[in-house]
Image 1 (cartoon, rainbow, N blue to C red):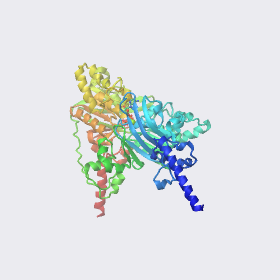
Image 2 (cartoon, helix red, strand yellow):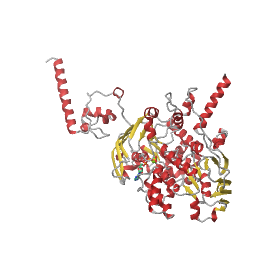
Image 3 (cartoon, rainbow, N blue to C red):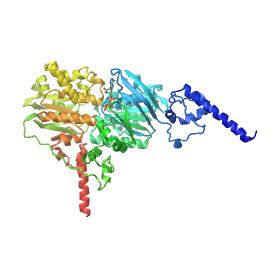
Image 4 (cartoon, rainbow, N blue to C red):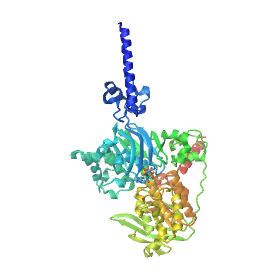
Length: 637
Ligand SMILES: Nc1ncnc2c1ncn2[C@@H]1O[C@H](COP(=O)(O)OP(=O)(O)OP(=O)(O)O)[C@@H](O)[C@H]1O
Ligand SMILES: [Mg+2]
């Protein structure tokens, strides 16, 4: 027998063995999935030849049916991706109280090392729940069922011990206060390091390093309670960074921050991404600022299913109606351009820089802004004279005097920690001032009986949980109506209508504490809107809301305002100030720094606005951009 015949026989036998092997795999491991093996192709080829483990992929523990010829499969050649940092496969999760309905439904996606993903979806669609799955809190602490797989660095997430997983996945929760368990900044970071058994002698340097990454070294010995909202966000970030995770998840990190603190935080994260390699998942409603940082977007719909995975720009170009239908915010500039030129088919700007770069080819945007009518000629409802308030040794409110007129829509703006909440709490009679007096209808607040005062002034707290006292959403909204002795039919009608307006249908029987952050916020507004107070004071009512719920909430407030209710609203959202308020009060270090019509505020010098931690609304930014161009044309021609 010549060598060529030998080779031929050898090939035949080899082929038969392969076919037999493939048949065995197909028959005995029907769960095989070619795609599953893409992740682990390197392992597959090596082990396949040695035939260990019956050709099962170590990550997925599934059979590897697709037999390669034994040659090493090139990643580039097959378009395969391997060594994903995170791989989520057909993840579904349902809570016990909703046995027939999954909150997260069949979610699959992967994340590469160092990649940045923007996770978007309407309020209540399961974004934070997904976070809890990724950091291992679920299924460990879940009252419900979870199916599907999560692999982190090739290991099943459930195979990690809790401490081990937090070294791989760091999370900054939506409400950072819920994750603090120590009193001081230093102790809080040390707590996480102790949990991973970091030797004592390395700890000091690690804490300093984490704090310097977020520019907070000088706060090392501070009490956490004394930090502003933005500083707490940064501390939560430092705690996560100290563990050097491969994956960092930020759940609405800027929802409570003023515009300048928001910009600072995004810049900090941008710098960190340049210095270290870690993958990032950002959950946000407000996209401005994140566009340069994010490679990809994953969009969830109201049912917790993925409906798009890819570049956001492409998504906006291809499936804009779906994005709008789900109430997903677009970057403000994009939104504005699309509003003004619905059929715009040129390059779609996602940032102000991209818009400016269009140089002369910008779509025509109309300045259709009509300033609201000022209502200062009406009666004075609430008057504050020389109000001051001290907390421990810190002067929070400094000698503030102001008048609130009947039917006004007032926005209170200013930096995190400038005293906005303290001022409104005094105006609502919830906090007694250290000096000065506030008068409602000419009578000092301290002389009002609590029950009558609450009838006149409604107050929506910054932290919605502070005002929940009942066990179901329905009872929470119905509480004050029952107190007023309304009959059951009237209560049912009114509560049902408010619950619908606030986008809380289907949640009537839920416990308020199990709602998503956005839902909690809407419930806190619903409990106040249901009454007919003369004055409504709201502390950041729209934070953490998707486009639909923001519009619905603002429409409700506008409607109440038209019916004569005076609205006082603390907000960091300059678009809301621009479009709804007829007066804006700027609080800076406990003082009133400006009290004027919003259109006047936008004419203040940029350096001064920055000092007050404010930004211009997009419409005004655009106007400036056009004026600059017009000026350039007129001076250069
Ligand atoms: N522990 C729980 N028990 C029961 N239901 C829950 C629980 N946690 C969350 N839910 C429900 O699951 C849904 C998703 O909540 P989740 O907090 O994940 O939403 P989200 O997308 O983060 O919303 P938001 O943008 O408002 O923060 C909500 O309807 C909420 O009521
Ligand atoms: Mg959430």
